[in-house]
Structure formats: structure tokens, C-alpha cells
Length: 535
Image (cartoon, helix red, strand yellow):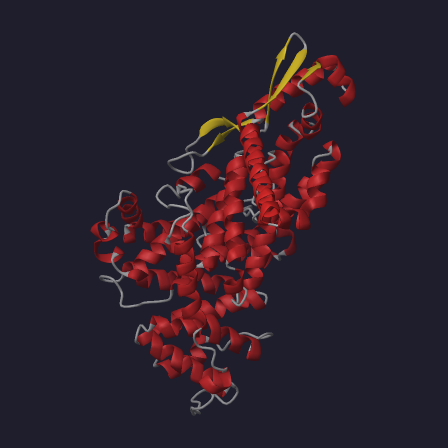
């Protein structure tokens, strides 16, 4: 669900809140964790730097105290600085090595392993054993949170909670793609994968996400909030705790992503029924979550041929990223955000080529700078098809197969399926940009004359005119849930075919843009006249 009135002040307040928490402490690592030397109780063969040892003790103490403020700095800043200093080419110490330092606290060790395996996935190359053990660690963590007697006494920063859900889905996606690459595996690896079908199974991943949503009653809370009520009225025992509420909320965004990865774009948008976009919401506090939500909403719209809605989604989040760039550019996730931003510009370029739309000046300028040549080529008929394929390959998510290929049944690669589906739709309308450019020059034109300009048969032209008529109208969101919409014109041209003569007129969309242009021209002329009088 959208809300067109974007609350600028609310957004700035949220960004300042996150930025203040993240950057209020810029003390050097050498000052923060090297003052106190702790005697190692580990085997002599294991060397843990003093800074790392002291960091783990400080980390552990703040987890016990549920000190979310300090945990945010530890998680978001200190851990990454120590990684860059000591562990760029090797893994962090295993949990068993640091266990005595933290009194064998299983909860903390489970959280530590989550960071340990995430570092391996992000900086190193995970083995099959790493993939298995990471899955088992997530199971331990989620079982502790979901199946304990009553809500657990644990508080973590929003950023970490989002990253837990995000990384869980990423590792599921990575394992699914790894599992399907059978040619590069030995018989022993294939046998091991077949003997453990429950590891990173689609059912288990979906079960976790739905369990968090159900446990937290987050959909009920959001529904009450949409109606103007207090979310706490529907929270229940678990939903009243920030840990469960946030994990439930982030699981909704996670299901949006998972369903897009599996190609169910309708169900993906259905997951967002109770989430209000463009409002002061929980995802606005975590930039990566904000970007993920809009990326997958926009991509789902694009694959459903609702290009106008996809353009709106991409434009909204790209505008947000431009305004908040000074804040997130200092984040450890800045490179990921920059790459995701470039991918959304690529998707936006394809949507603009298919459904020309007026954009915000800043977004339009960036789009022309990054993909101006691509847009021009995509509007030149058949030679634009390879450009569409190139941008789609660059910007689309890594699709997965829900069932895999271990049973020996031959299946097409998911990426190939969705690429062919997308390109087939492009081929059906590949001549429309050229047709549109000629029609913008005339108010009436005979079919035979227009056919000569386009170098095609008059009967084929009539068919292309019907395609143009159909493609110029789309289901477009007006109000309600994301799947709702009205069948509206999206082109700045309207026409009718009568007795082999094409009658062309500006549509309401085109007239609205023309009126806006004239109003602003008159305003500029008034300003110039006023200045001349003063002079």
C-alpha cells in the first residue's frame, strides 16, 4: 500500500536517529579494546589478538545487559573494523575457541556463530560443511527465540535483526544455486546433498518466516495501525517485545523477497498488504531493508507488466537514496547499497524504454548519465533486444528453483525461464517506440502513408496499432493494496483508427504534462518581467 504524501520531515528524523546511534562514537579501535590485556586460556596453537579478545568480552557483556545502544556500535562499527584489521583473508576464531571467555554461554555463542558464518560467506568461500553448519546454527537461534517458554530476554539492534533475516535468505538462495550446479560436484557431494534434503529446504525457510509473523502478530498490529489504532492493542505477549515485533516485520519483507526469487510475483506483493509504503515505517529505520522492499516491489511490478507502478517504486527509493547519501555512504553496507542502486537504475531504464514517463529531474539526470545510451538503443527495434537482455541479467535477482535438480529430473534454469518470458513480451512491442515517434508528429495520417514511413505492410501496421493501443493502458495503482489498481492510460498519446485513417491526440497524461509546462513557462516569464521592471 502506497501513501503518495511522502513525509520528508519524518524521513529526516528517522535517518538522523539512525545516524546518531551509528556515528556518535568514533573512538579508535586501539583505544577501545586494547587497553586491557586478558590472559588467554586457549591452546597455545590458537592466537587471538588482544584487541579481538577484549572486543569479545565487551560484546558479551553488552549482550547480557541487553544494551542495544552499545550493541549497535559493536555490531555496526567495531566488528567490521576488526575484520578489516585481522580477518580479511581468514575466518574469525571458531565459537569453541572463545567459549571459555564467555562462560560457554550458548545464546551468545549462537549469535557469534551467526557473525562467524556471515563473514565466511561475505569475505571468503564457504565449503559444503560451512553451509550445513550455518543452517544448523540458524535453526538453533530460531528455535531458541520461537520455542522457549515465553518471550526470551534478548534485545538486539534493528540493523542486526534485519541482517539476520536478510542473511538467512541470502544463504538459502546461495545454497539453492550451489545445489543446482551438479556438473562441478563429485559423487560424494551429490550423495551428501541427497541424504540431507532438509538442509536449506524451501519449506524450512518459509516455515521460519511465517512463524515469526504469526508469533509476533505483526500483520494484526499493522492492520490496527492502518485503521488508526494503537499497535499494542493487537500485539499480544510476544508482539509487545521489540525482538519479536521487528523479526516479524522483517520476515514480511523476507517473504516478499523469497517469493520473487521463486517467481511468484503476485504472492510476493500480497505479502505487503498491511505494510504502508512511503510513510514513517519501521523499514525506514534500516536503509538496507528500505531498499530491499522497494527493489522487490518494483521488480515484481515489472514482471507483471505494470511498468508505471514499477517506475514509481524505483523512483521513490532512488530519490530516498539520493537525499540520504551522506548518511549511508559511511555504512559498512555502502558498497552493497551502491550496487543495488545501480541495479534499480538499470531496471528503471528498461521500464522507461517500455513505458515513457516523466521523472524527477535528479533521477532523470542520473538515469541519463548511467544508462542514456542503453535507453536510446532499446528504442531502436530489434537491435535493442540484446540491451534488454544485458540489463536484465545485470539487475535481476538470482532466481532459485524450489525443488532443485537432485532427483535427476531435467529442469530449465530459473533465470532462463524468466529471461525468456520477459524478452518474449519485449519482442511483442519492440516496434512501438518507432511507431510512437512518427505518430507524435501528426494529428491525422493514413495507414498506407504511415506504413511506408515504417517500411511495413499496412495490415501488419494495423496489428501493431492494436498492440500499441493495448500496451498504452495498464493496471495502475491508485489506492488500496499493492495488487489493487485501475486500468488506465499510461501513454502521452491517444489515437483511433477510422476508415484507414489514424486520428491522433494527446491523452490526458500528455495534456497534464503540457499544462504543467505552460504554467511554469508563464511563471518564469512573470519573474523575468518583474525583474526587468525593478531594473
